[in-house]
Image (cartoon, helix red, strand yellow):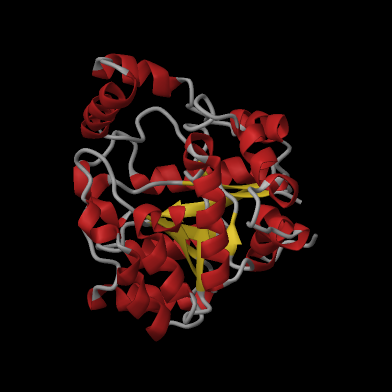
Length: 306
């Protein structure tokens, strides 16, 4: 079974204009100049009000299950046209259309005055199975003011997928270091936290914390670009990650639907699947490790029968 732990559900009016401007600047640096309107038009291809595009994305790559995520950017960059409560409700409704394929994760900024109430609605009324955090909108996750919120998360026994690693434009990287998850992991051992992107450049910090905190997981989302750029270095880094924290808490992710145009999801899966046979000399991966990363580990975390 292949499980994508990191896929963004997107729809019109879900992001603020400020994000488009930041994306335009990043796009210009990477691919050449593109006006904000062009970025909007490009992102419009990803809008998916029914989940049909997500299913096509999964089928094309051979993905069995996928978490669909809502991102709450509002308090950091400006509230979007569609309120975050409505976004979460739509995400849950989309997942209900494909109950054997899609797993909804709510997006809730814990600074919101109604954060606990919204969490309750997301889980109890709409059946959402996890949370997505983006601390880069301006909060340290371990702020004790959020502890009542975490107590409710702990009660529900749902995982948190938190962005870790530097972020572009108007988003603030200082809040995204993995170390700011440590106090939550210590004070709420029932909460499993997934460090999205393994912290990127902070992966040594992330995996070191994970080596002593069994409720910290990481996902390889975004690392397909590193594998494409320097396969040997990617293999060496992944081997070091596994040696530090074990393979059983490392999860597969795509950051879909954004990254696929640059590196197909099928190629990303094949890159990981072929590690036991194609890794550089002196670097060894087992079939058990790869099977766990591609889906077995996420299945255990999410309570999915293999």
